[in-house]
Length: 95
Length: 308
Image 1 (cartoon, rainbow over the protein chains, first blue to last red):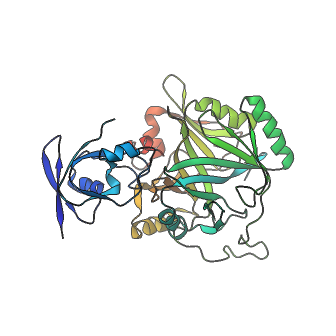
Image 2 (image 1 turned 180 degrees about the vertical axis):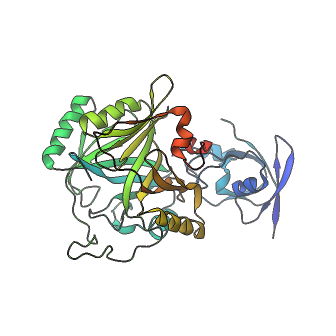
């Protein structure tokens, strides 16, 4: 199975995401990255992160209460709603 | 089990991000029945043990969360009296005509509580086509599905100034609080309110942001059914939040989980029989971990912090 390299900018740690798992599931499995576990449904906003580099696919709708259109343009996403499509660099989302 | 003129929370409308995914959860996993769809695409649902037209409405939107909860009262006279009393309490009231946005429902009066939540009151609603039998009745018309949720039970709302909201529910709607939780300086942190013998019909937690929902809950028959719900949850890959466990508060047994749009759902059973003449049970806020999760004995931090 294809795996994608995830880099957590704050620590420089690298870990791997399976092609069929969400970034949040990957971060939880590796106990790494800016991990905050919430609803896994795009509703609660708990797992907000920023993707600095790399391609990803949004497979689930994210609540506009937490992610604005402007946020999305800057790579600010909910980790439970995206899947990497290549190597990505992730950081804690700005408040 | 109502002991006064407010009968029960009989209707809740919530927002979902993806109707298809959430509807599959509510119907095939939780076990509600689809009653029908409104002209604007909302879906009406009910538990198999509910007589009234519907009790849960899903609306697809860009955000998850709570839209309103409506309490059924015992008569049109009570409804008018409660409208007047609500206005006297200080909340402006609007009227939603019968059979408008909620098919089958009579006239509703709505207002915004100080916590930021819309609350509605109604007295009349048509019976559902498929409803519990009454003549030599079987327990079910059709064998229930999935988690076999019987009915909508209660909702926990987060918002500011719950002390005032508690006064509204007790002074205007005639409800009472069998159980409360206070901060060290004696301010209300949480309150559980009921209109009958259920341990709670609505609960409130003090929170700085208005209009938030912690969860809404469905009644299961007993602890065995909580086990069945856990099996159904795991088999369907539903994201678990907490449980199966017991609350010390209300003494109910429970699982919390996330429906696919991120609203927290509780499947709840048991709980003590509440009476308005019993002494109030009081929790100190630093003991609330045990109060919420009796087996774990401590708070699960995400539980109180995540709301929609």
